[in-house]
Image (cartoon, one colour):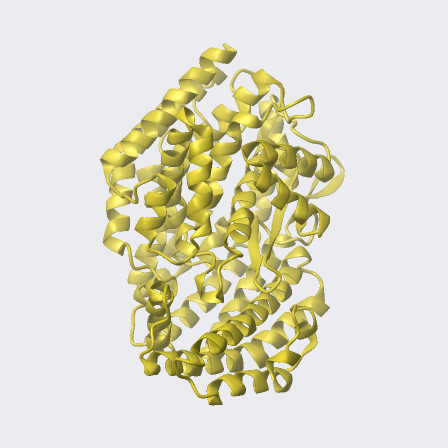
Length: 567
């Protein structure tokens, strides 16, 4: 009957469960033996791709316009009426394959993952997991609705980001305080949402007989590192990176000539130069990014052109759009979709390069035979962060690049300093979540979350003066989207950044060789272990202070070279 299955997910967006169920029943009831295994896996894989893509297309529609009630209803219908039944049937297929004792060639890693997923599955969690997704969408709605009046015009908070780069300090402060006050208006609402999310997640984990942290570790299929490794990584950051971050901040303070650095002093050029303006329209962002990807590797440039031609990019910021940026994978179509909130600043350039790396991961994995072998979450952020670094040297390409040589050096300094400064921030987010899910009696209270966040902030984020801004400082956890929608995921950005810098270090000596190794690692999908993926890319998967210090040293060295270049 699989000959009647659509070859794309679009029709499935309107299907109800009665139209989908027969395909699962066919797989559940079909005899499974050595002779039928390959065809059975092919059909299961194609069905899984269609179901997964249906989910992501419906989800994406809710983020591009959080005010669209029709999209919200379609997404809710999928979560309520289809996803629980789909997951239940999927569990039967996992159990069927595992019970058969057969191990297809090259399927070792997927079998490991399927065993873990089957072991933690609980039918009573299906509705709860759907509720979790709905609450995540509620967070997006709250953030997407935040606007203020600036210069007589209603603007979203991301649209104020260019103001933070203006030389006029009073104007920067006014914009920053306006945005912060608007965010604080939702403090109670977000706190209530957090309580609901936490209670739900604790129930889900308890049903599986686990703490939530243990549950989430399995859900994320983390086999190569533990919470203790994360603690070691945070300690290494404290020893190696926090002093480097302090030096960067102190250098900024001196160059600005201010008594103390305030939160509105962190984005402005410290020499008083005009803000970088890399593009004035989304079409310009797309075309210039395409040129850069072409220079990194012609095939990567072609991938990006496919996305442009097939309208798989939603890049501009607007009222009602969910916050942040992401790249989702449309499995059946073998295509990525990039979502972001561009407002005309250099961070937008880095975001498109970052999400481009995710997109290229999708394309490079598309040759793999099964749904279960494609993009591994544990290596995904290496793909994206490494692309930001590999592409950095091409910001000035041709006559249509984003910048001239001096501006490009400024942009690269800004980005590279941001890498160093990110690690302490990542440590705050990770430590906050690790504490929270191991101390549910405390984290259930938003005021205790405020206290813990402030404590961690003071520990890892030195120099910046928050006096008189205590409420804004301690509620920073409410503005970190990952805490609400991707629990315990954030540490992967820090670990991946360490791997990506090692790839970039190789590229400083051999760009072509480093790009080739990078692409080779991406093409392996989930067919090998995480350590093997890092090794193929030319890096080491590590948490220790020595490896971190080597990465910091090369980053700071290049920053110094760039500063000499423009001095």
